[in-house]
Image (cartoon, rainbow, N blue to C red; front, side, top):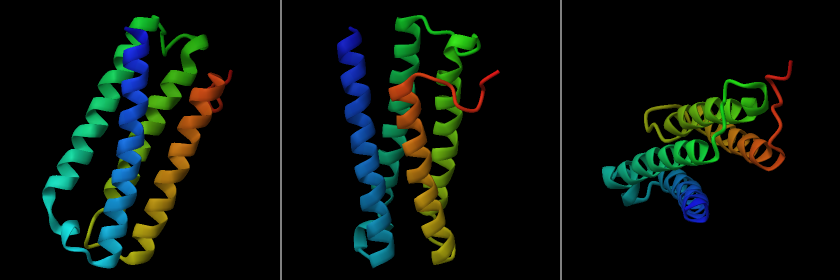
Length: 128
């Protein structure tokens, strides 16, 4: 069960990142698919599924995000929320181009932070 959840979780993360980059590219190049809401809905549902699978992994592994040994999970959840905010901002059509680009780079930065937390399993900000 653990292997299935983990590999599905990671596969959906890859799909979500690729969809985000493709959607941003379509938005910046004026591609006709940028206007179709179906791609944004797929991205939204992919993010929701990633969150649910992550919650399933937390439950399966019995990690308490509010205990000192599980702070890295709490940081991952908070970083994921900030990543989602940046994705939403980057894909908003009526924002200035500079703001969209900053949001795009910010989303990739939050994603790199999440990967760092996942690989090290050490809290960075909630160390105390």
